[in-house]
Amino acid sequence: MRSGNRHVGPRVQPERNSRCEREDQRECEQGCSRKKPVQDDESGGLHARSVATETLRRVNALRHKSGRAAGRVKLRPTRKQPRSANLEPSEPLQTLDALEVETERNPVRAVIWLHGLGADGSDFLPIVDELDLDGLPPIRFVFPNAPMLPVTINGGYVMPAWYDILSADFSSRREDPQGVRSSAAELTKLIARENARGIADRQIVLAGFSQGGAIALHTGLRHPARLAGIMALSTYLPLADTLATEAGEANLDTSIFMAHGYDDGVIGFDFSKRSCDQLLAAGYPVDWRAYEMDHSVCMEEVRDIGEWLRRVLA
Image (tube, rainbow, N blue to C red; front, side):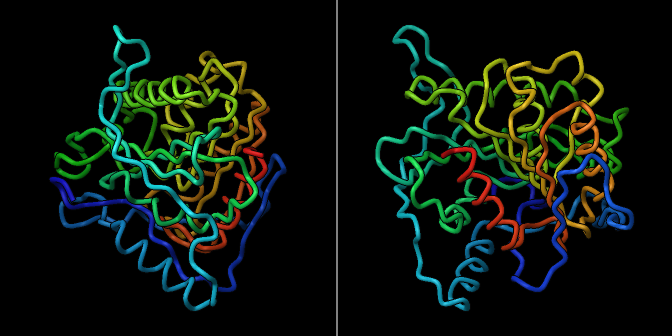
């Protein structure tokens, strides 16, 4: 991992009999919220949570235990994308480094998936093979690497981050608007690169975990062209107070998949649910899911993500 060793990335939890909540209603059922305080390390920063190899190990162990054959979809790894992708010979578009895999040759759909704080583009690569995407048109999964930034809550450590985190309570008074908007601009460039490669906005899903999910939400809801969907895992709505005046009309009815763990000690369940409720109140179609897990990913959630992707990318 690059400089800074505190990582808030996904950890796949073993499957178990869990309380999984699906809410399409506009109000949360009573008694569904549970929250733990943010888990700090000795310097008050966020704990390291996982690395890509640990995610892959857990996924493979679960697959072996269930007797499933590996590789429901045969992924085609593509080369690490350079920072420069030419839209016009005279006008290069500078984009973030990204890892890519394709489900088949000549993809006509794209999922741009952003990792969490301290992780990198490889973090969710192992999960793609678990999504059961047989029968869908060819899809390109793009996993960009966040820029290296000092993170205040982690003592100023320089690490992969989409924006600075000033406080564990994520209050609007302690947000980093400039950082959020800067990463949103980078994500918009990645959308433009997919357009240049022949994939229209309406065939693109913006996705992310934790910080990455916040950027996916922020960018997708303001994007001027219709998207296929927005997926926000274990996250919240940043710069929420500006959404009403900045929302893109094209995505007012775009499907949004939001998922969170009841026991999330990094981004509290109640905080994420308030973001969901705000979106529902504004008329957005949010498919809300909650699981018995912490700031991580569980296999029930992975299956639900696959089901949602099959719907929005059909």
